[in-house]
Length: 144
View 1 (spheres, one colour):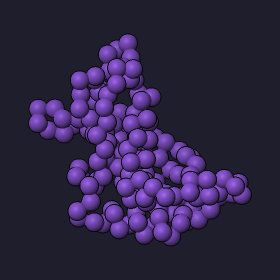
View 2 (spheres, helix red, strand yellow):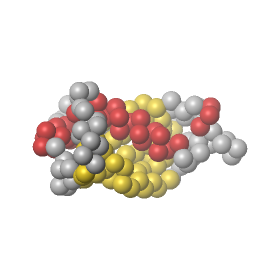
View 3 (cartoon, rainbow, N blue to C red):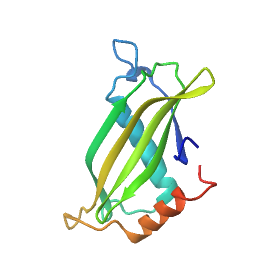
View 4 (cartoon, one colour):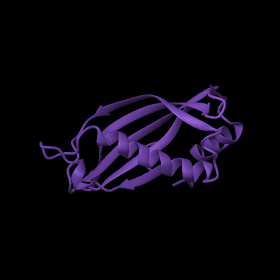
């Protein structure tokens, strides 16, 4: 657990993530968030979601960068659903690394997702079952 984030995903920094300045290129942070988000959805919603019928559109992503990430850094991405609306919800992330036995925030981000039916090509309500699972997980003291 980190702050009020209950879900943690370790992410390996790959050599290909490093740019000429010797740190992780900022575009890779979105990939790290995505990796953690998929892990979160699989754990919280389960793996039997029909992503075509009850899909998602990424409507917005914003990131604040605080500390560089280097190849040798051990990083973790913490994830939570921070807002649930009628047809959309927000996923918040924080990337941390261990430095001198303390967790240091490298970046924080938030993404807005709109629920979408890819067959009908229309936005849809956030499924009630998702809402219940998000809320239950985020308020569960034993969550990962």
